Image (tube, rainbow, N blue to C red; front, side, top):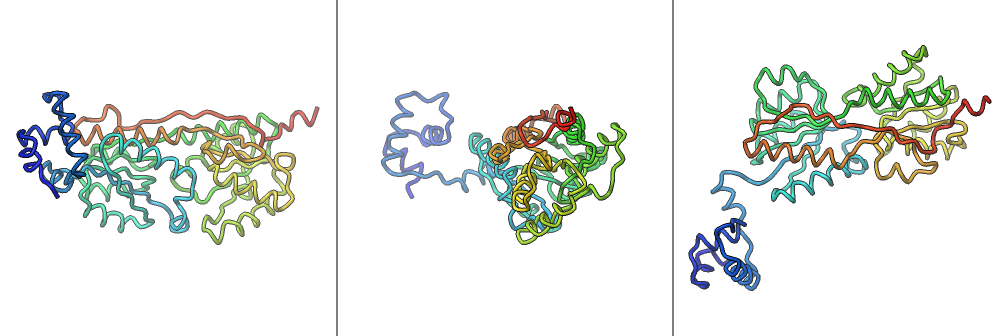
Length: 347
């Protein structure tokens, strides 16, 4: 491959001038020189040696993305519309900033730490860390870190000196608002559908129970429905769950993805939505807008969450101290057609 020195000799320029044009440092270079260099680079199909450049600058220009997921969801996590939409926002922001993305998915925090410690990345974006996950990662990885939708002991994280940002939502408050909407529409027997009671799913469950309690509705353990998110187990568990839903009038799902799956199972079981069962989701993802009946849900800006996480990380990589550790994004209730107003039926 042709070198910068050879290009400079051919064009009768200094290697510094050619290097500055190649790397975009053109403030001190004339327009004519830039055009001349770029034209020649195209003619010889020049490709910069990123490895050599990164070694010289002591950086890789690579940002690591780590998804910690449950063992049951591991095989199809990228099929989740929330995940794909979020990664799309991150990839775009990384590319526009001149960086590259490395993705790793695992349910095993020990495996994650082993790989993270060996990566030559400039920073990490970590999803869904729980308990002491963040602490264990920090002990092996001292570079900038941004967390997404993570619930850990942040006070301890600050005590051990980690510089971090967490981008998340008021999950508990948003879930509470969703259930209050169902109650306002006359529903008193309301279920909660999720895959587990941890992380954001736990916070949304807490918000769900809080809304019931404030309305004087006693929560029944029979109203909690935990589905099996594996490819083989989803249909079986949802079929089993819908048979248990005969004593409720509405169900709040921890994600639009689960709400859509439930809606499809109801169709197969001959259960009319919302006439016999009202369904409400969380996320307002792209697929959720296509369901019929159209899904009533809690909206969050999924793409923007990924963009914010990326921009905050790049600021930290460039030596800037975060102005705030917790960036909490807003949500809003989106009213569509999947919730029946029981108050109108009683009139």
